[in-house]
Length: 481
Image (cartoon, rainbow, N blue to C red; front, side):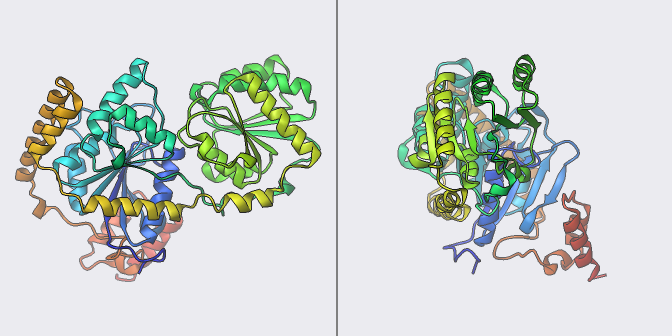
């Protein structure tokens, strides 16, 4: 029985995305936290992503979470280049070796995620996709991405969105049946984001911004807010964490208005350092122009900060009205919202950080997210796998006479390539990996010892990220020497 409660049945789940640690972001955190909770509930979980610098091969993270860092070429913004077919030999080998039953892909921006869905369907595996972003419908980039999403999701078993706004957006973009789309929000670990009023200086008012410094996050709005409010409130300070191409705009604002002592740019932050930055502030500001969910405002509220945010995407669904001030995405509206928060702070009408934390920690938990995701896995496991004829008919009927036939041809070629690979290397001769997680494996010395020593070799030759874990591995392996 798993620590998080008994599961109806154990699944072997492969999480696939171009975005994973050591890269930092909401998708990366979501995959890691969800994987940990699914492991706790008795499932086998592994992650497949591309190599990051020298981080290649196999690594093991907390609780034996196995991560494959594949040697695939990165094209743009940490997303791999794709020819669709080049990834099939690698992904097929992993799916067979790990006895994967469900492929769970993440992010519309990830080419590897779409490749994995395509190959998994050719192999007769169940597929789930989680969409973490909102897209438009007018610009060229959105049109192309939406068409790719239509093709990728038309025969995917189930889709998960992180908010109801995100669900509406995805259903419209990919022309989906709403019944196969579920809403499961993101979450935060409340023990990682606790308030600490002693860390902040109450002689000043500190506004914290933690975000990637890119256009989509509204950094141009922030560059207009800073000088206006700093001129009006002499005791106001800004603490900005994050990195990106828009950093130069904030540096120019700081230089032009001589605000070096009042605007601190911290640069890129490790996720474990975010809490130490948040607790130094009184107000958290989010200037995003589009968001499906926005975990940052939940983390800030969990630390006891008053949140001021733009009213875009799924943000109005995230926190109750008494914990967030929603504004239009304009400099004037955001300044008005910040001034209202400052007035409440000075008058002492805001609830204490501990009170806010105690409310927020009950809203979103990863265990709840894992339980709801598990129900999706149960649902897709009971579905009948589409035959090749059914899959081709769905591609042609769903994606249009031109795109449908093109991708139907790709599906046929992909299946023929798969048949060739199975002839060259039959599934029966591919070694089955020893389970580190799930009901038949454990993060214990029995796992590392193995019967034939192959487990020792695999572990000791892997690129393990944690020196402490490496010492533990060597200690366990030495017991059988």
